[in-house]
Each structure stands twice: as C-alpha cells, then as structure tokens.
Image (cartoon, rainbow, N blue to C red):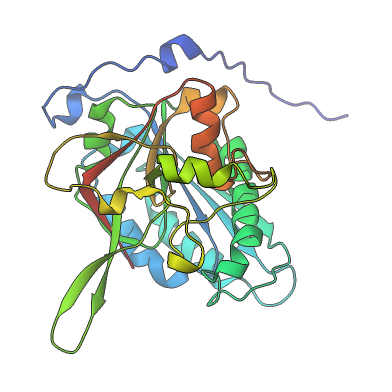
Amino acid sequence: MIYRNTTLRVLDLDSIHTYPLIGDTDSPALLTGRVLILTPLVSAASYLDKYFENLSKLNYPKELLSLGFLVSTTPKGPPDPTLLALQTHIAPMISAYRRITVIQQSSEPRNYTHEGRHAYEAQESRRKILARCRNALLSTALFDESWVLWLDVDVVEYPPNTLLHLMRLDKDIIAPNCFRIETGWFSSSRVPYDRNNWSETKESLASQRVLDEGNVLFEGYGTDHPTYRQSMADMDQNSHQVVPLDGVGGTFTLIKAMVHRVGVNFPVEPIDHEIETEGLAKSAKRQGFGVYGAPYLIVRHA
C-alpha cells in the first residue's frame, strides 16, 4: 500500500487577475505581479549563454519570476545538447527564481531542415508544430502567475526594463518590434525580423474574401506571397504610442495570464486564416481582448 501526502492549494483567480497600475518607479519593493517566462527550445544550445545573461539583467525581482522551457529532442541517439546545456545553466540558479519547469518531449516528424525552417513552403507545418509545443508548455507550466512572457531563445538583446515597460502599458497582449542586424563589408543595418506583428488593412481584408476557409497566410514573403497588411516593423518608431494590432509574433510577447486561462491559446487550425501566435491574436480579439504593439520599443534577434 502506498501512502501519499496531499497538499491543498487554493488559488484566488480574482486576486491573481488583478492588475494594479505600475507607477514610474523601478523599485523592486513596489512590484508584486508574478510573471511566467516561457521559451520553447530546439537545437538552441548555442543561444543559452546569452539568453540567461540577458535574463539575469531584467529589471524585475527574480523571486517574482518563474521560468518554463520545452525542449524538443530526438527520440533516439545521444543526449540532446540543448537539454544538457539547459540543465547546466539552471542548476546554480534554481533557488533564485520562484519556479523552473523543464519539459522534454520527442520532436514531431518534420518535412524541413532546421536551416530551412524559414522557407515559405515549410511555414504551415513548422508553425503547427510550434503551436502544439507552445500549448503543451503553457498548459504544464502556468500555475499562479498573473502574466506570461513568451521569449524566444535567440532574442539576443533587449533593454533590462523591457518587461516592466510592457507591464506598465497594461494591455491584454502586447509586443515590441523585433529587428536583427545585417552586417556588410563597410556597414551594418537594422532589418525587420518579426513580421508577425501587423494590422489588417482594407486591401488585406478584401484579398481574404476570395480565400478558402482553410488557407493560412504568412507574413514576410514579399511580392511572391503578398498579404497587404501593415507591418509594425514599418510603423513610426519615433512616436512613443502603442498601436492596435491584429497579429502578433512570439519573440517577446507579454500576455495577461487571464487571457490564456479563458482558453486563448495557439490554434493549430486556422482562425481567420491564421495559426500559432497570429491565430492567438485573432482568437483573443474575437473574445474581446485587446492586442497591441509598441513600435518604438526594440528587441534584437540573432
């Protein structure tokens, strides 16, 4: 016979879903909101040093931060390098954060290589796999937090106050702009990376009327696959104003946990021709939540 100790946990969601306005102070003593930072990982060992370095600089109390990772591994073969590297990084910091959750699952079969994951032909399969990974990570790791930050492992630079800045804006869903640096022989330039932050236009809505219900649209593929939407990457970055969006990416996206708890997750089947993060935005707006972007706030992708 096995005896098991049982712990009774009572969660007051009304309290958890109370979002007091955060003032202009950066004093950690005045911050109370619990945040869950979620990051899916695949073939990501080389990015973890910088990921945890940036995380350690966040201007937010670590005792209010929980971390969650989902590592997609091959079912057979040697130990996964990403999982081994992750275990090495988190071992000395377990006591610093509220909670750290690591989920390991076998990778789904893919019809594309890691290097070819951004090809247009790979997007529907890739984004559906990523949607399932995000849903598994969210459903396993979310407990008593008020906020969920979706953070890509290969976001390599962001101001330490980025999280706090987004929380102060008090939006249901909000994302900054995400760029990367392209280096040439004599100069470097900043180019958009996350084109999944966008708003619909009259032209984009008109073009969708002739699409079959199951057609999925993807951003960032130029004149070969136009969507006629307004990308946040092309909006005014000098005006410190938030803008309403109809789609978001997942590079550095902050979501009130109550949005997820009412069933807004990452759809695998299209909602208004969108899946994964952009489908989440469409689903959220259907349920009356606000989706916004901060074009002036920049994070940098590898």
